[in-house]
Structures are given as structure tokens and as C-alpha cells.
Amino acid sequence: MAAKSVSQTQLSGQAIPTIPAGQTTVLTSDELSRIRTTLLHADAKTSGTQILSEEERLRLQLRDMSKQRMSTWNNTLEARRRQKEQARQAKIDEEERRRQVLDKEEAAYQASERKKAIQRANTLLFENTERVKAFGSKLYICFCISR
Image (cartoon, rainbow, N blue to C red; front, side, top):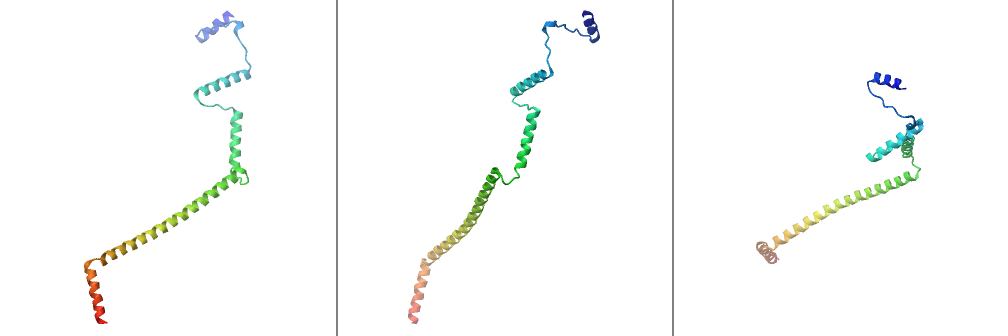
């Protein structure tokens, strides 16, 4: 065996260590894949990521496909809940539009009332000036004299 290891070292150019016979362990492929999976999951946990097996990945893919297909159904509890929510939101939106129309009408009405009040105040101020009062009294005297 020493001659064989010497010839291998001569071919590769590196020294190959010899391992005593009692210190070796033979692993099956299942055990080796289990160890690799365990180490990968441990590395993934420390880095904050998650490694999914093929079965888990397939299960998640099928679940997503099922949810996507189910989202188009109208007779499920979730679809009914979604329809009720949409109807409630449409009702709220319509009520808000009506309120906005009423608010615009009310604003226009308040503006016209304000304009009328300002015109009335200006008229009262004008009529309370001395010149208008004097003109009104002279007009009244003329009316009385003509009668």
C-alpha cells in the first residue's frame, strides 16, 4: 500500500495523507443528502433566508395556483365578503359625490345671499347720506304741494 500511495503522490505532485482504517465512516447517499440539507438550512437560518425543498416549493406553487383560480369564483365566502365590501364602498362613494354636489349648491346659495346682503347694506348706507335725505324730503314736499 505504501508503494501505491507513493506512485499517486508522484503523479499528482502533492502528498496524500494516509488515514488509519479505524477512523473512516461510510455514509449512504440518503444520509449525505440529509446532512447537506441540515447544513444548508442552518446556514440559511443564520443569514435570514429560507431554503425550500422541492416538495415544499411544489406545494407552495400549487397553493398559489389554487388561490389564483379561486379568486375568480363568485360563490365563495371570500368572494361574497369582497362583493359586500365593494358594494359598501360604492355606496359610500356615491354618498360622497351627492354631498359634494350639495356643498357646491350651498356655497353658491351662500355667495348669492352674501351678495344680496352687501347690496342691501350699500343701499341703506347710500339712503342714509344727507344729500339723499334732503332730496327725499324735497320730493315729498313736491308731492304734497301737487296734491
